[in-house]
Length: 270
Length: 284
Image 1 (cartoon, rainbow over the protein chains, first blue to last red):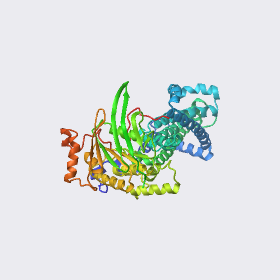
Image 2: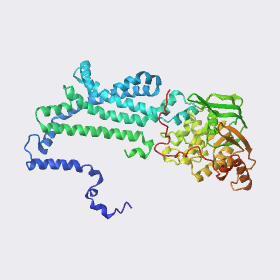
Image 3: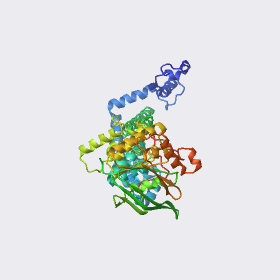
Image 4: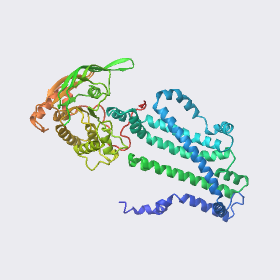
C-alpha cells in the first residue's frame, strides 16, 4: 500500500515537501515574512532590523570569535553546574528512594524546598557567592538538582516488586539487588531526570546571566545588544541560545535512546 | 541429574492479618512429595494454592506447622528451590542469555561452568538462536521458557510452578505442557505445579491435590495412574479429569477450566509487563 499512495493525498501540498524538510517550513515562512516586511517598508521602527543585518552581525561575531568566547563561557558554566547538580541529585535521589528513614527525615524538608521558585534563590545565592561565576554555577546546580532527585526517587520506587522477588529467590545480596535490579529498573526515570536537568541547566544559565550580571556569557551578549539597542545582536543571541538548547536536547535524546534500547520500539518513537 | 528432595508439609497453617483481623489462608495442610515426583495442585481462586507455593519457595514466612525439605525446616529462599511465576518476570534490560545467567549469579561454579550451564539450559527449553534477544522481542511462550531455564539453571531440588502457562493461548499452553513433561523426565527433579486448569493438572501430575477455599484446605488427593505420554482424549484420562472436576460441584463440571483468579495478564508485552498497584514500592 505504501508504494501506491492514494492520489488524493497529493492534493495536500504539505505532503509534497520531503519529510526531513517539513519542520523548516514554519521558520522559513517567518523569515520570509520578516524579509518582506523590511523590503516593503511595512514598518520603519528600528526594532525591525533587516535579515541581512542579522546575518552580517552573525558573520562578524563568528569571524572575530566573540560569539564563541561568550558561548564557551556560558557552556562551561552550564556543564559544571549541570555536573554538580545532577551528581548531587543522583546521590540524594538514591538515598531518598532507598531508605525509608532518610525519606522520613529529609523528605518533608526536600518537598518544601522544591516548591520554592528557582529564582527566589538568587538573592540568597548572590549574598553567599557574590555576583561572579560561583553564584551562577550554584544557581544552575540547583536547577539541575531538583529534576534529577525527583525522577531518581520516582524511578527507584517504581521498580516492580515482582522483580525484587525474583532477586530474593535467586539470593541476591543487597549490592546485587541495587546494581542489577533497582538501578537498571530505575534507569528510564533517572535518564528522564538527567535529560530534564540538562534543559533546565541551560535555561538557568541564561537566567543567571540576566540576574547576576557580570562577566562573560551568551546572555551578556543579549543584554549588551538590548542596552545598545542593537536588535541584530539580540536576535543573533536568541538564535544561538535556541540552537544550543536544541543540540543539548538532541544529544540527550540520542544517549537515552541508546542506553535504553532494551525497552524496545515503544521508546524509540519519543 | 540433580538431587531430588523429599518435601514434607505437616499441619501447615498460614494466616494474614488485615486491619487487625486475622484471615486464615491455609488450614492444616499435610502433604508429602516424594523425590522426583510431579504433583499438581488445583483449586479455585482463594484456596491459597499460590500462598502454599510462596511458603515453600520462602517468599512468605510466619507459618505454623512444619515445612521440611529433606527434614530441614524451610527458612527463607534458597537456590535449592526454584520457581516459575505466572508472569515471566524476566529482566527487560537483559538478554535471554543474561537472564538465565542471573540464576547462577550466586552459584559456586567457575565462569566456564556457568557459561556451559546457561547454554545447556537454553537448549533444554529449545531457545537456541535467541540467546541475545531481549524480552520485548519474545512471545509470551518463549518468555516463559526463559523463565523455566532461569529457574532450572541452578539445578534446584524442587521446581515450583505457579500457574506458569495461565496467561498463554491454548496451543502454546498445550505445547509447553509437553515440554515441561520432557524437562521433568530429563532433569529428574521434584516439581509442584499450581494451576486452575484441571486438564493440565491431570496431564502432568502423578497425583492431583484438590484444594478448597476459605480457608484453603486439601479436599482430596487424586492419584493419576496413567502412563506417560498421556492421551488427553483417552477414556481413562477423561474419567480421572471428571473425578477431579466432581470435587468442585455441579456448575464447575460444565467448564473444564475453573474460573481463573484474575484475567490473565498480557504476557511478553513490550511496554510494561509488570503493572503494579499504586503505592507498591521497594525499600532496603
